[in-house]
Amino acid sequence: MTTTKTTSAEQGSHSSNYRRSLGTIALTATGLGSIIGSGWLFGAERAAAIAGPAAILAWVIGAVVALTIALTYTELGSMFPKAGGMVRYGQYSHGSLAGYLAAWANWIAIVSVIPGEATASVQYMSSWNFGWAKALYDGTELTGSGVAVASVLLIFYFFMNWFAVSLFAKTNTAITVFKVVVPILTAGALILSHFDTGNIDRAGGFAPNGWSAVFSCVALSGIVWAYNGFQSPLNLAGEARNPGRSLPKAVAFSIIIALVIYLALQVAFLFAVPAADLSKGWGGLSYHSPLAELGLAWGLNWLALLLYADAFVSPSGTGMIYAATTSRMIQGVQENGHLPGVFGKVDPKTGIPRPALVLNLVVAFMFLAVFRGWGSLAEIVSVATVISYITGPVAVMGLRRLAPQMKRPVQLRAMPVIAPIAMIFGSLVLYWGKWPLTGKVIFIMAIGLPVWAWYEIVRPWKQGRSPLRELMPHLKAGAWMVIYLVAMAAVSYLGGKEFGGQGYLPPGIDLAVVAAIALAFYYWGVRSAWRNPSLVQVEAELAAAEAAGEADGAKGGETGGDKAATTA
Image (cartoon, rainbow, N blue to C red; front, top):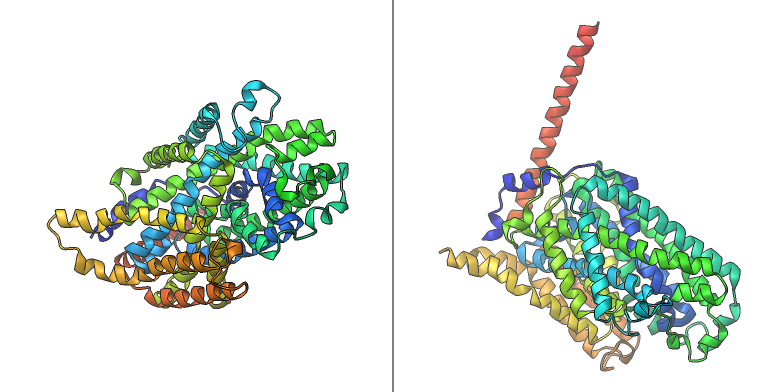
């Protein structure tokens, strides 16, 4: 079977071409730079449109969900400091089927962010007071000229990642500083210019659409998209100088800093909206460039100009980061055995997986052609992201059961409690995404299965091998994930009408059912983990690398002792 054919030497060659040059600050900048992209430019308005002032709570819920799930991935990232980390963990714990589905969901969620960032920049540009600019966006999606401008931005992201990791790191750190300063400045300026607390009572009060809208807000307004940036440091684990120490810090710092910034922006937006604009309720707001238009409304022309400039800087910084991390993900999928060998090649001079960059650029163009609005992309990214989340809690505890002897630079004592809670949180957010969107994205997950079948069934069969006996353990171990997706689609369809369902499950009962499903599949998934060939292989690789490091250290110590003796 293909997944067992990739040799250690081949993988080692891939990994050895990466430059371990990224420290905690650079990784935190990468995570924060991924989080603060287009989400802060549109998220406050979109969240308010769905949940009203209660959107403040949605940002907190989103951060708690992201941080809980991220904790499971920091242990995995420190165990396996390999590029494209998040597409590998399911493969190590459950074999090819679950590993492929998790990788596919993760890749779809991340690669679609790249055109989303370009779309955000062009949408903000469309509010410029020029005829050609206004023609870029029709109020719902980009026009032909808007798609052309967004395409230029995609090519820019591509070339910024083509040359070297060091150029990416230096550029990204500088951009991230700008991206952090401008949102803080924006929130402060809006709060000082106009802070009408009466907006809390207008247009239906604090939670005008009920508490179910707060939960849907987490899944649909771009909040999940925003916090999803915590993945970026994990996907660059192969280039971290000290992954065991820097990865958990980078992930936690990026989420917490982002939460503070997003809360400030949400509060500033809610109280800066002119009372007249709320005549049709929070859902009636129709800004093209929300924060910039509020700045103009209160005479902050300088802020509007700054935001128009940042509408390129922030999304472009995030677009560059995701172009980098998705290329590492593609290389990881290839090493899992599910893509042609060319996509696993890393340029030895620059440390860049250039063929993977090209593939992601092509796919980004396809997404841009089909989904031309930031809102439609945000919804798809969010639901696909949640599906990719569910393997983390299961994989981390499955590997604790299978391989307790493996080195874990990050190992939380509370993980047996954190992991099932993370599974429940992820399942709830998936349910809050509303039917039929949940069903559509789950269907997109099924679209990737023919690729898996080609590499695991068709190609071995054409080579004269009978793969079914070898494949059965992978199918058995991955069955929990396939049936979980079917179960979640069913409960979404049958669930509460406030979440797009048929209303067969009463409010409150539906959430309890989702939590019960999450726990049942969590324990099934943990018990399904098995010592598959990918896990055995990576254990051997890590043991060899550790032995080589100890040998180099001993050799260095002997050399140092000889030098000291000579000096004496």
